[in-house]
Image 1 (cartoon, rainbow, N blue to C red):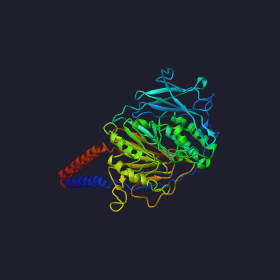
Image 2 (image 1 turned 180 degrees about the vertical axis):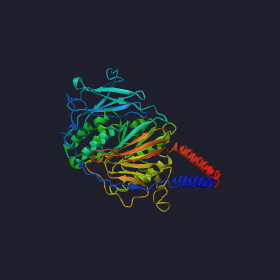
Image 3 (image 1 turned 45 degrees about the vertical axis):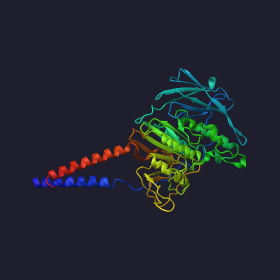
Image 4 (image 1 turned 90 degrees about the vertical axis):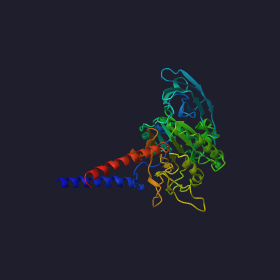
Length: 487
């Protein structure tokens, strides 16, 4: 009986050892191509008379209100609003109570024409000297037409400052776009990293192009008036339309959406950097010169040197065109940027790169293709623990529809892909790890579809060594117990 009991214990331990060993050996997973097919919600723009685009009540009431970070370290915001009939007041009132606006900030006002369209009066106000982790209330406009909003500043910069980002791209203004925004607003995220292609107004002609910028500004105000959206520009912001006499790129976008580019020593509002909580966020421009010795390339090299992973351990890059993409749509369009910038991403151990452009979702493993030099070396992506994870989230809901044709077979570097609408969240827990979710909202339903734990490239190495030590100690304990029972 003792022998039977001992043999049973031995077999149990052998099974446990085998299970643990196999778990350690086979810790990876094959890539997944989702077969989900949406059945409803056509990709058509919301009609102009829909309540999603409602003009605020009152003469010359402020509209299209949106916030972005206004400095390098998160103690300032840039607040923008539009008045349609007249410039009106350019003074913004704010404070820590909605019944006592003890401070004021003066802004600037501008407008522009696009073909025969005349924009409203666009106000930009910098509110600086704010306290961290504080709720502020603000009021804009005149008399009975004044409107009131609020925002929350981020926690003080530090390696363990927890924070939750949302990631949205290629949004547009369809019913699918509305579903994305409404689901995002219930996510608990505090700031949006927007990866380009805002209004899709360039799909309209003549005066309607400007009108669709106005409707989009009112459409997203439900979120943008209360929390920062960190802007990057996509191809639909270029608006190069010579048949209308419009040949100045990014004209509408640059008038309407300011960025704090000077705070990071950038010379152009299309590329810049900010620090927020425990993250250092770098915004790149896919549609500006980026090869070696261009201003963007020189700036990126200097900015990466400024990153202090002791203070902001999370290094995040956002851009519009993905440099890894296994969809037939826009396949290889990011290759020239990859050839220039990927080695920098690997050298500085960027944690994650978010992009849009492709109207589908895709996540990669940590891979790189930096050894190929045209005549020799690997000419295909290989696993690289120093490389970022590349995530494409060009799935906000625009009228061009989904990119449903993935290349077959699925490349080894691709972990998960699906042609659906949705948004992502990245919840930073501390210096070592963050929780990532992609949420499908096709057919109007939010479904958490892809998720994983993202380990920090700078601090995660120590964390991984600690985990390996724990596993090693556990195996020693198991083997010791097995041998002590007479194996």
